[in-house]
Amino acid sequence: MSVNCFNGRMTDATPPTDPYRSTPQPLSASDERLWSTLIHIGGIFFGFIPALVGYLVLKDRGPFVRSHTLTALNFQLTMLIAYVVGYVLTFILIGFLVLAAVGIVVLIFSIIAAIAANKGENYKYPLTIEFIK
Image (cartoon, rainbow, N blue to C red; front, side, top):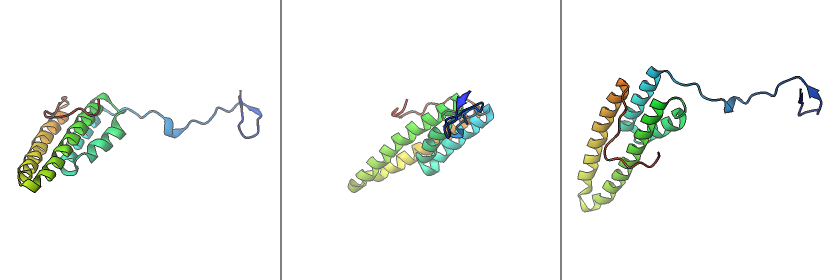
């Protein structure tokens, strides 16, 4: 028996469950691969935003997708710092080369990571600072 919060009487009713506190359902292996691939590809077009959203939303849905979103987020944050340095250096004209190099690195490594994720393999980006562990 439990006490009803509204009138203080004993009832047989169980307290309602909070739908916002339920544990998320795990993703299937194919869904984990799909989301990991999309997050790596999304980083090419939208920077760190897909990795951040993916990490916050999907981190509890499976170990594979958590690993890939975390890796992608750390890589994209590292490349964001490189972009900022490149923009600052444009005042002395070397920044254009830095921006071009960072763009090429993001494109190539994101495609390699997306292919690895699609195959179900783990991938670790080179040149990455691990902000989040």
